[in-house]
Length: 332
Image 1 (cartoon, rainbow, N blue to C red):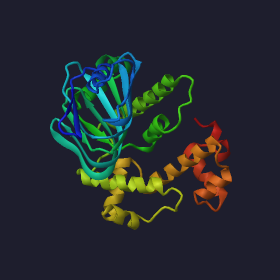
Image 2 (tube, one colour):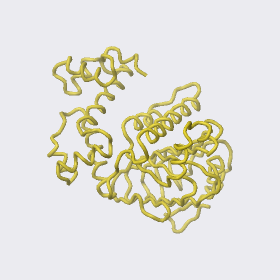
Image 3 (cartoon, helix red, strand yellow):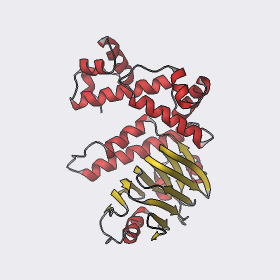
Image 4 (tube, rainbow, N blue to C red):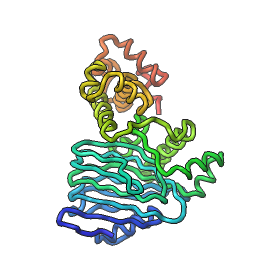
């Protein structure tokens, strides 16, 4: 149900068994006529949309992209039949963001952006509070027990997934690029649902492969939400300053308010690679994006990224993708 606790606060309590039921009930709560798989939110609530796509029997996803026009709290009550839930979300411009799992705070931040990937299941109680003005983009993937049994070869792996109430990780570059495909790149596909479905399937495949190969410890997150926000600040800095030379570790440590040693260790544990490798990988993928779009020539791309010697750029690009920049169009 959706209720006004004050003029600015709205809340929704979900007891929905699946995403198809959620979109029907949430539409009714917004006083909209249920129907179809997309909700274009009323301005009193948010600017943007939510949609549900059923990809396979037992595999569905919810995609949301909106800016809140009121504070909003969401609570998901436990339901009976087992369902694995993967959340991949980016929050921007939040004055306050709080998420709890079984009444325990797992994210609590103020005046900062947050992005993260989380695994849980429908037997847990989840809550979220986000303030007015926040930009929310994200995907919820739900997998039924039958789908997991049909697609995961090892009963041991299935058992591990069923027993894990909570797993959290940082959104690494390979996930972030798929999110950009879904939410930022203009979808001109003549089969838009297929375009979205294949990218959501790829996200699910990447995530399940990662955790079943590396274990549910995966990338080790900081112990405190504050330290996690510090790492996300560094990740944002490296991503946005890709046209500049790699900054010194000491300079990054001052931004993060950490010692250089702690920053290097914590960043590698969380992101699975060193600060420089993360910076370089992002630069090469930006180069690939420009070259495939045809907006920049090879020489211009190298110059923009600060390469005075074009051969050095070619070596770096080939190291990342296995081909020279002039063959970028061959890459998928």
